[in-house]
Length: 263
Image (cartoon, rainbow, N blue to C red):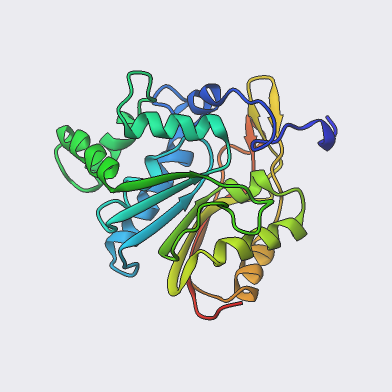
Protein backbone atom coordinates (compact mmCIF):
# COMPACT_ATOMS: atom_id res chain seq x y z
CA UNK A 1 0.00 0.00 0.00
CA UNK A 2 1.40 3.40 -0.94
CA UNK A 3 1.83 6.01 1.77
CA UNK A 4 -0.55 8.32 -0.09
CA UNK A 5 -3.40 5.84 0.44
CA UNK A 6 -3.07 6.02 4.21
CA UNK A 7 -5.80 7.82 6.14
CA UNK A 8 -5.03 10.68 8.50
CA UNK A 9 -6.33 10.66 12.07
CA UNK A 10 -7.05 14.39 12.15
CA UNK A 11 -8.36 14.81 8.59
CA UNK A 12 -10.28 11.73 7.45
CA UNK A 13 -13.42 9.95 8.71
CA UNK A 14 -12.24 7.23 11.11
CA UNK A 15 -14.20 4.78 13.22
CA UNK A 16 -13.00 6.15 16.57
CA UNK A 17 -14.99 3.61 18.56
CA UNK A 18 -13.25 0.81 16.67
CA UNK A 19 -9.94 2.58 17.39
CA UNK A 20 -10.80 2.41 21.11
CA UNK A 21 -11.92 -1.22 21.05
CA UNK A 22 -8.82 -2.30 19.07
CA UNK A 23 -6.14 -0.66 21.21
CA UNK A 24 -7.50 0.64 24.50
CA UNK A 25 -10.59 -1.21 25.78
CA UNK A 26 -10.74 -3.95 28.39
CA UNK A 27 -11.58 -6.38 25.58
CA UNK A 28 -8.49 -5.56 23.49
CA UNK A 29 -5.75 -8.14 23.02
CA UNK A 30 -3.82 -8.64 26.27
CA UNK A 31 -0.43 -7.86 24.73
CA UNK A 32 -1.81 -4.63 23.27
CA UNK A 33 -3.31 -3.56 26.59
CA UNK A 34 -0.12 -4.42 28.49
CA UNK A 35 2.06 -2.37 26.16
CA UNK A 36 -0.17 0.53 25.10
CA UNK A 37 -2.22 1.09 28.29
CA UNK A 38 -0.68 -0.52 31.37
CA UNK A 39 3.01 0.08 30.63
CA UNK A 40 2.63 3.84 30.05
CA UNK A 41 0.49 4.11 33.19
CA UNK A 42 3.22 2.41 35.21
CA UNK A 43 5.92 4.75 33.91
CA UNK A 44 3.78 7.83 34.51
CA UNK A 45 2.82 6.67 38.00
CA UNK A 46 6.50 6.37 38.99
CA UNK A 47 7.46 9.70 37.39
CA UNK A 48 4.68 11.76 38.95
CA UNK A 49 4.91 10.00 42.31
CA UNK A 50 8.63 10.89 42.46
CA UNK A 51 7.78 14.57 43.00
CA UNK A 52 10.00 15.74 40.15
CA UNK A 53 7.03 17.21 38.29
CA UNK A 54 5.17 19.90 40.19
CA UNK A 55 2.65 22.65 39.56
CA UNK A 56 -1.02 23.48 39.36
CA UNK A 57 -1.83 23.48 35.63
CA UNK A 58 -1.54 20.61 33.18
CA UNK A 59 -2.25 20.32 29.45
CA UNK A 60 -2.72 17.03 27.62
CA UNK A 61 -2.68 16.51 23.87
CA UNK A 62 -2.81 12.82 22.99
CA UNK A 63 -4.22 10.24 20.62
CA UNK A 64 -7.75 8.81 20.47
CA UNK A 65 -10.41 9.20 23.17
CA UNK A 66 -7.86 8.11 25.78
CA UNK A 67 -8.02 9.21 29.39
CA UNK A 68 -6.08 6.33 30.99
CA UNK A 69 -2.77 8.23 30.93
CA UNK A 70 -4.37 11.04 32.98
CA UNK A 71 -5.18 8.74 35.90
CA UNK A 72 -1.57 8.85 37.23
CA UNK A 73 -1.59 12.64 36.78
CA UNK A 74 -4.81 13.88 38.38
CA UNK A 75 -3.56 13.67 41.99
CA UNK A 76 -0.78 16.13 41.21
CA UNK A 77 -2.50 19.03 39.36
CA UNK A 78 -5.48 21.21 40.21
CA UNK A 79 -6.46 21.99 36.63
CA UNK A 80 -6.25 19.73 33.57
CA UNK A 81 -6.91 20.99 30.05
CA UNK A 82 -7.40 18.35 27.34
CA UNK A 83 -6.68 19.28 23.71
CA UNK A 84 -7.95 17.07 20.88
CA UNK A 85 -7.61 17.28 17.10
CA UNK A 86 -10.30 14.75 16.15
CA UNK A 87 -13.94 15.92 16.58
CA UNK A 88 -15.35 12.46 17.40
CA UNK A 89 -12.66 11.72 19.95
CA UNK A 90 -13.27 15.11 21.55
CA UNK A 91 -16.95 14.24 21.81
CA UNK A 92 -16.11 10.88 23.40
CA UNK A 93 -13.92 12.54 26.03
CA UNK A 94 -16.70 15.02 26.86
CA UNK A 95 -19.13 12.11 27.25
CA UNK A 96 -16.78 10.34 29.65
CA UNK A 97 -16.23 13.45 31.78
CA UNK A 98 -20.01 14.06 31.93
CA UNK A 99 -20.72 10.35 32.65
CA UNK A 100 -22.95 10.13 29.59
CA UNK A 101 -24.82 6.85 29.15
CA UNK A 102 -22.91 6.29 25.89
CA UNK A 103 -19.49 7.02 27.40
CA UNK A 104 -16.55 4.69 26.82
CA UNK A 105 -15.69 2.28 29.63
CA UNK A 106 -12.26 2.92 31.15
CA UNK A 107 -12.83 0.89 34.33
CA UNK A 108 -10.06 -1.58 33.39
CA UNK A 109 -7.54 1.27 33.39
CA UNK A 110 -8.93 2.80 36.58
CA UNK A 111 -8.73 -0.59 38.31
CA UNK A 112 -5.11 -0.95 37.21
CA UNK A 113 -4.40 2.52 38.60
CA UNK A 114 -5.85 1.52 41.97
CA UNK A 115 -3.53 -1.51 42.00
CA UNK A 116 -0.50 0.66 41.20
CA UNK A 117 -1.38 2.86 44.15
CA UNK A 118 -1.83 -0.26 46.28
CA UNK A 119 -5.41 0.71 46.95
CA UNK A 120 -8.38 -1.64 47.08
CA UNK A 121 -9.68 -2.27 43.58
CA UNK A 122 -13.03 -0.81 44.63
CA UNK A 123 -11.42 2.64 44.75
CA UNK A 124 -11.20 2.84 40.98
CA UNK A 125 -14.46 4.78 40.83
CA UNK A 126 -13.08 7.40 43.22
CA UNK A 127 -10.05 7.80 40.95
CA UNK A 128 -12.31 8.41 37.96
CA UNK A 129 -14.30 11.00 39.90
CA UNK A 130 -11.12 12.79 40.90
CA UNK A 131 -9.98 12.96 37.29
CA UNK A 132 -13.36 14.27 36.15
CA UNK A 133 -13.22 17.00 38.80
CA UNK A 134 -9.75 18.11 37.67
CA UNK A 135 -10.61 18.37 33.96
CA UNK A 136 -11.53 22.04 33.55
CA UNK A 137 -11.43 22.41 29.75
CA UNK A 138 -11.70 20.19 26.67
CA UNK A 139 -10.64 22.20 23.64
CA UNK A 140 -10.37 21.49 19.91
CA UNK A 141 -6.88 22.12 18.56
CA UNK A 142 -5.38 22.39 15.09
CA UNK A 143 -1.67 22.11 14.27
CA UNK A 144 -2.09 24.17 11.09
CA UNK A 145 -2.76 27.23 13.27
CA UNK A 146 -0.03 29.28 14.91
CA UNK A 147 -2.06 29.18 18.13
CA UNK A 148 -3.11 25.52 18.39
CA UNK A 149 -6.37 26.39 20.16
CA UNK A 150 -7.34 29.51 18.20
CA UNK A 151 -9.57 31.39 19.02
CA UNK A 152 -9.09 30.14 22.60
CA UNK A 153 -5.91 31.48 24.23
CA UNK A 154 -4.54 29.28 27.00
CA UNK A 155 -2.26 30.30 29.84
CA UNK A 156 1.07 28.50 29.82
CA UNK A 157 1.05 25.28 31.81
CA UNK A 158 3.35 23.87 34.47
CA UNK A 159 3.36 20.58 32.57
CA UNK A 160 2.24 19.36 29.16
CA UNK A 161 1.90 15.71 28.16
CA UNK A 162 1.73 14.42 24.61
CA UNK A 163 1.09 10.74 23.96
CA UNK A 164 1.65 9.49 20.39
CA UNK A 165 -0.30 12.31 18.71
CA UNK A 166 2.75 13.84 17.02
CA UNK A 167 3.17 10.68 14.94
CA UNK A 168 -0.34 11.03 13.53
CA UNK A 169 -0.73 14.73 12.74
CA UNK A 170 2.57 15.51 10.98
CA UNK A 171 3.44 14.48 7.44
CA UNK A 172 7.24 14.94 7.65
CA UNK A 173 10.08 15.91 9.96
CA UNK A 174 9.84 19.59 9.06
CA UNK A 175 6.18 19.83 10.09
CA UNK A 176 6.96 17.83 13.24
CA UNK A 177 9.60 20.37 14.25
CA UNK A 178 7.12 23.20 13.67
CA UNK A 179 4.49 21.37 15.72
CA UNK A 180 6.90 20.81 18.59
CA UNK A 181 7.63 24.55 18.72
CA UNK A 182 3.90 25.18 19.08
CA UNK A 183 3.72 22.67 21.92
CA UNK A 184 6.72 24.28 23.61
CA UNK A 185 4.96 27.66 23.49
CA UNK A 186 2.23 26.26 25.79
CA UNK A 187 4.69 25.44 28.61
CA UNK A 188 6.04 27.82 31.25
CA UNK A 189 9.76 28.42 31.54
CA UNK A 190 10.89 25.80 34.04
CA UNK A 191 7.86 23.66 33.24
CA UNK A 192 7.89 20.03 32.17
CA UNK A 193 7.14 18.26 28.91
CA UNK A 194 6.23 14.56 29.12
CA UNK A 195 6.01 12.53 25.91
CA UNK A 196 5.28 8.92 24.99
CA UNK A 197 5.60 7.48 21.49
CA UNK A 198 7.13 4.82 19.28
CA UNK A 199 10.41 4.78 17.38
CA UNK A 200 10.45 3.91 13.68
CA UNK A 201 6.67 3.80 13.43
CA UNK A 202 5.21 2.45 10.20
CA UNK A 203 1.43 2.36 10.47
CA UNK A 204 -1.59 1.92 12.71
CA UNK A 205 -4.54 -0.19 11.52
CA UNK A 206 -8.16 0.54 12.45
CA UNK A 207 -10.45 -1.99 10.81
CA UNK A 208 -9.80 -1.80 7.06
CA UNK A 209 -8.00 1.54 7.36
CA UNK A 210 -4.29 2.13 7.74
CA UNK A 211 -3.46 5.39 9.46
CA UNK A 212 -0.44 7.50 8.65
CA UNK A 213 2.24 7.60 11.35
CA UNK A 214 5.37 9.69 11.04
CA UNK A 215 8.56 7.69 11.57
CA UNK A 216 11.61 9.00 13.43
CA UNK A 217 14.37 7.61 15.63
CA UNK A 218 15.81 8.35 19.06
CA UNK A 219 18.44 10.84 17.88
CA UNK A 220 15.89 12.90 15.94
CA UNK A 221 13.47 13.10 18.86
CA UNK A 222 16.03 13.98 21.55
CA UNK A 223 17.96 16.44 19.39
CA UNK A 224 14.74 18.20 18.43
CA UNK A 225 13.80 18.69 22.09
CA UNK A 226 17.20 20.17 22.86
CA UNK A 227 16.99 22.51 19.86
CA UNK A 228 13.71 24.05 21.05
CA UNK A 229 14.80 24.79 24.61
CA UNK A 230 14.44 21.57 26.63
CA UNK A 231 16.82 19.72 28.93
CA UNK A 232 16.28 15.94 29.01
CA UNK A 233 15.67 14.81 32.60
CA UNK A 234 14.49 11.23 32.05
CA UNK A 235 14.44 8.94 29.03
CA UNK A 236 13.68 5.26 28.55
CA UNK A 237 12.72 2.94 25.74
CA UNK A 238 11.47 -0.65 25.58
CA UNK A 239 11.41 -3.07 22.67
CA UNK A 240 7.90 -3.48 21.29
CA UNK A 241 6.16 -6.84 21.30
CA UNK A 242 3.66 -5.62 18.71
CA UNK A 243 5.98 -5.08 15.74
CA UNK A 244 4.45 -6.21 12.45
CA UNK A 245 0.91 -6.56 13.76
CA UNK A 246 -1.99 -4.13 13.66
CA UNK A 247 0.39 -1.37 14.74
CA UNK A 248 4.08 -1.38 13.92
CA UNK A 249 6.98 0.35 15.69
CA UNK A 250 10.34 -0.79 17.09
CA UNK A 251 10.28 0.62 20.61
CA UNK A 252 7.90 2.41 22.91
CA UNK A 253 9.63 5.41 24.50
CA UNK A 254 9.12 7.89 27.33
CA UNK A 255 10.83 11.23 27.88
CA UNK A 256 10.56 13.91 30.56
CA UNK A 257 12.15 17.25 29.79
CA UNK A 258 12.35 20.70 31.41
CA UNK A 259 11.94 23.92 29.45
CA UNK A 260 15.12 25.89 30.15
CA UNK A 261 14.87 28.66 27.55
CA UNK A 262 12.30 30.33 25.31
CA UNK A 263 12.54 30.22 21.54
